[in-house]
Image (cartoon, rainbow, N blue to C red; front, side):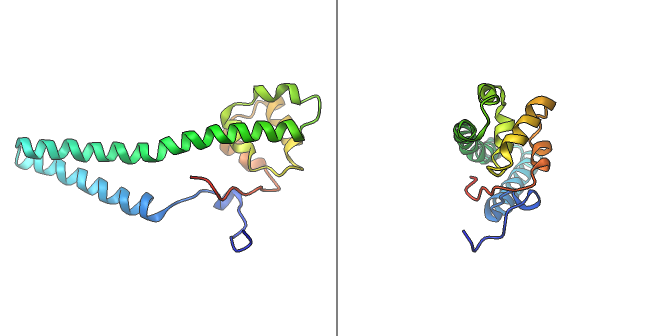
Length: 146
């Protein structure tokens, strides 16, 4: 992956322009147009088109949410296995205390940085993804996020 720009906190979010911007704009415009038609010309056909437009927006949301949920479960497993390998003996029994949010954020910490950062997260009760990500100094990229 040497041809990729190094990943950092500032650029780690993944956007697919055709999905996040173009498709979203098309579906929102269609929904707005459907509302307009129902208001101006209230017919059963226009009502059904509004329901379909709403259904497409719901589908758009779930098309992103379902794979992200599966990926989050895989991240949880991967990070628990990684912690089992990297954390010192006194922290290994506490692996189960990490929340999903903490594990998802900690996946960006390098192997060298993970033990100290994991200890800090547990002892200080740092829970927000963004708060943890901002603490990472040696970024471990994740280019495969869905």
